[in-house]
Image (tube, rainbow, N blue to C red):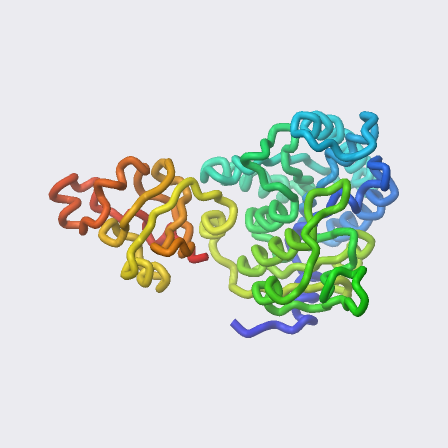
Length: 377
């Protein structure tokens, strides 16, 4: 796959039939934590213009906690989970009321989707979310998506909406992802440092992750930082989706293909939605350790993982759950969907297909992970 030019990537964003836009808390709120209606209305104006020109638009919006803690009398974002969840419950309603009014002025209807990480782990739940989003888009609705902060726990959550937006882009098979934040692009170093310059185009974000010095902390009203935005761009890039990172005030120009912010080229052609789910949306529940021969076969990308090449199983998982496939030195080789429950695997380890069929029965003669359910990492 040849590397496209920046002009080509910008054109693809402008011509996107389906575009996912993510906006962070700091881009929607005032410094005291209250929702900034002027900022929200300006963003909606750019998104509505794109929608009215025929594109399908999905908005991933932070801001529930940030919108809620001011009206509840807090001076800053609460730090304990229970108060965050309560604040989100109040703030989400305030946020959606403003979005509904703002889009309504353009005759555009919106719908709210609140997602937890659990919704993307099980294949059935993932397909349910996908079907709902597809139908909303068919009906001309702009889905507004947020992590369900009122119910999500620290143990299982996306943690920030940057990652969620990249997964949503996979869900709806988006043609482009636009990440809006409080800086106007990716810089060679934190913008406050002398000599730091904006990078207009990143042909390979996988390489850029190791070359650019970025800050990792978010604003006082948000949770993300530049690291999470680069990771979202990476997920999109290896999923075949071009990305633009810029500030919220540049939303309109970014969607029109103007050279604002930083554009990231895809590094692979788009995979199937199922494989993208296995690779990115699903959190592995356990690990299967393989020997050197099996590791080489898995790395080749065309082989199933057979019991003969497996040496150890870790964790508790059920058939159909996502698992890591690791080399003996701990290197992650792939993610895959387990063909068996974790308690069934130990007695299968090291046995070839003939032995499994003879000793355990025909039902144990298929792979631990079928090649159609393996995604290299």
